[in-house]
Image (tube, rainbow, N blue to C red; front, side):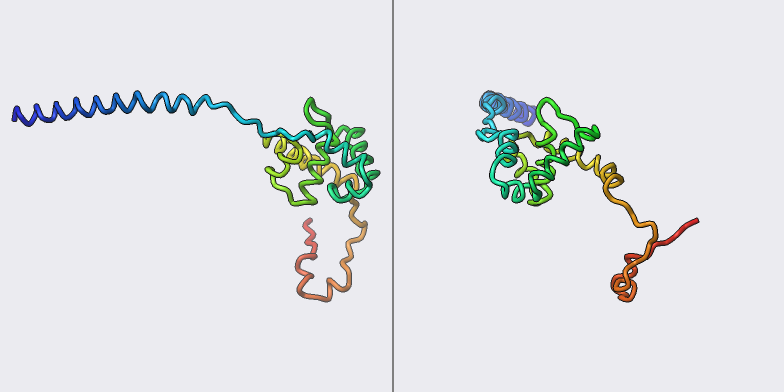
Length: 173
């Protein structure tokens, strides 16, 4: 039994020495990896404000292509958002940029990665600004959309059973 216990003890010491050697190799390698310099991601010369300014001040088609609306309408909406206090300029993002991000996202089905590249902002900033814009949609809906006083569904919809179930209004009293 003594030789067996001695053999186990010897094995454990060898394993411990190997663990120590491994420790002295792995720890410095891990430390190097932890302190690698980060490579800047947003390096484009065309920052978000410069990009929006270039589109708005450039050829009239640019605004239609990038934001799917005429320049005048874009400016009018931004003015409305500012006057109605629905959005605010922040230290890093003006209302023009926020609206441009939102319209670019909708009109091009753009991912967060594409918005990050195009507008040179972090994913967190993009997410926050897009979410803020979605939060004001109900206020815009009540301002610009008005339901008709009398709910009458078009004859073509009423007469076609494929569409009518989706347009039935149930009244609950």
